[in-house]
Length: 186
Image (tube, rainbow, N blue to C red; front, side, top):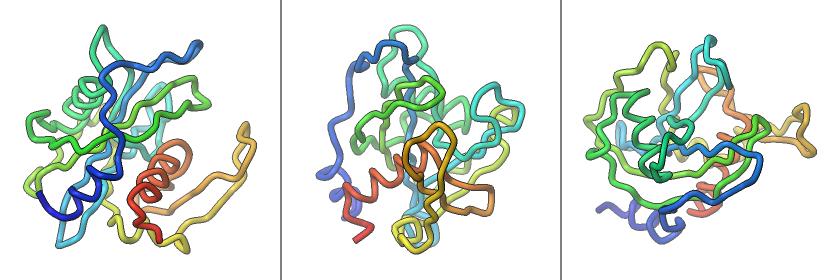
């Protein structure tokens, strides 16, 4: 295990084994895939296709709605496999982040995992329009972020421009949660 993964394991919460109930919200889980690329740690993000029924065209982590009696971890890994061809056995789970609720009615659980340097995504083109690998060190630079008002949100939300689109909303909040937990942003 490398130093970054040791820091992450200490900073992150245990992976939730069961869903935390939130009445009125649908359960979902995402994977924050961390991958070493060109000597830098990156976070793999997807841009959802414009034809998706929810969050169309948005930058997101791989993930989705709970199916059956699967756990949050099983859900995040299943969705990552469906969207990117990521074999669940190739994910080293490092921990979790606090769940959050979205304006779209989802209660989202977050799993953080390391994926191999040799993993090449095979996107499901019905769901994934493109992929980005922003370096964590760049994401940790607060000067690169812009805070904007968003309809139906009581406070300004973080926005970060990527080549594939704008990282904002719940995904941006989860990135901030990760950076603050690990003190990358200091």
